[in-house]
Image (tube, rainbow, N blue to C red; front, side, top):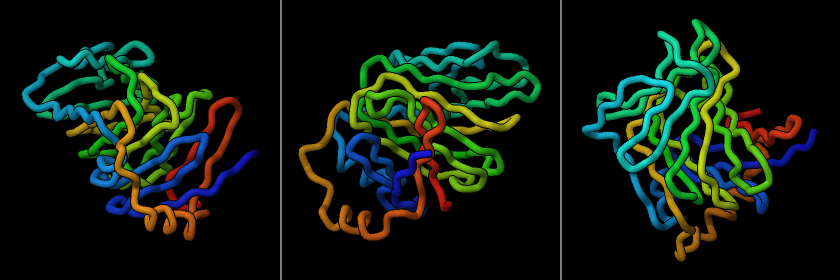
Length: 216
């Protein structure tokens, strides 16, 4: 099993980790916004889309489930936020995939709620070499907070997944970026990241690279 070290910090601080061939992850929206350009934000305000196997937002973004959506599954936009419920309990859809109308270099999501007792994964081809799974063990992300990624290659979709029977989550703001910013991230931040790296690791299982967010 290959491992790479990365920095794990509380939600209100900056970068979690960096690899030249992987993705840079953020838990601070302001820091993410400094590092990217061409930002577009979906607030979900005023949008009402009933739960269905596939829904399409006004800007063309598609949210689709990985299997048939049954009574207890959720793939909807209501009350000014996106709501998703995944897992295998009561035939919930196993995954939810977001497909963007254009390729992006990164995203930042403001989670209004996550079931903190259930593992949560965000999966995508963030480095151009195959699927990478950002893993949040139970309780590591908390019930709310922000999380973002800047890929080392453009990507056009991401997938929400869980290892458990029922994970539900709500996102009230979701921003995407098309390019990197011309303003560099302050060097002091990178020095800090290098100095206290190793608090979390990247787990690679099979063909899917898994990065765990949280303390080992």
